[in-house]
Length: 293
Image 1 (cartoon, rainbow, N blue to C red):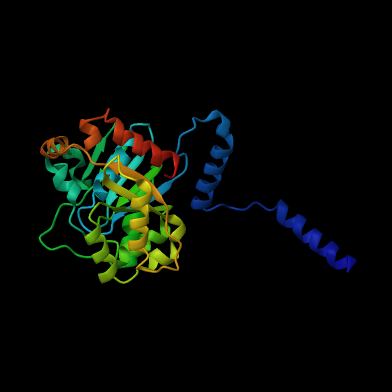
Image 2: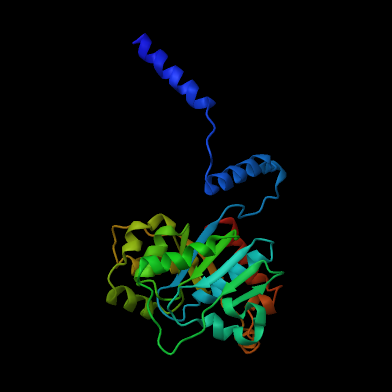
């Protein structure tokens, strides 16, 4: 036994003396590791809410819940706090941002090929696809991955707006990768009930329960949050009453209709037009800190 150990130690020492050639990828990883070790400690870095990457998928259970309003203004809010933010839509669906933000006019010619709108001192990147006559659903995982992973580069916060396309194969795959899933509902209870009755329980509703947060949009500020939550909870329980109900994450009040119309006519985001809108900013700050109602 002693001789076996001695032979092992001798062989190990010989290997230590040899010079190994690192591949290009290994060399880059080694350089990155050294830079990381030489960088200031966390105590020396500003306490940004997203020092690491955070991926949030935002969806509405049915059309016109305002999920795109929540996603886009949340992204704009954080980019205004010097958080490098990327906002995008699920590929293969009609791009609402391309039209509503007038990409053809607002995106410079040098950025036209990528269709990326840069705002907030280039802290916010909004990606949109030119609408096609026929939209093709992105169901191939390889295609979805080739679209998704490049978005993770050079950003701290990635907000993926999938609108009401939560039952697609691509959306289901994204739900598994997201850090949080925001499900937006509004005051249209009949439409909510119709959705949970007509649609089978989505797999991510059962497997990603801990990630799901319910956002109530366009709700009166003076309404009883307790009674609202009980009504939403009872309706969503139709999908599967055995699943623990996700918490209500935020209650966003209705915005002034005239102000919303003005932002649409100007092809701007709401907070882009009204940066001092206190009620909405308060609610987005609530989302930032992760407080529950």
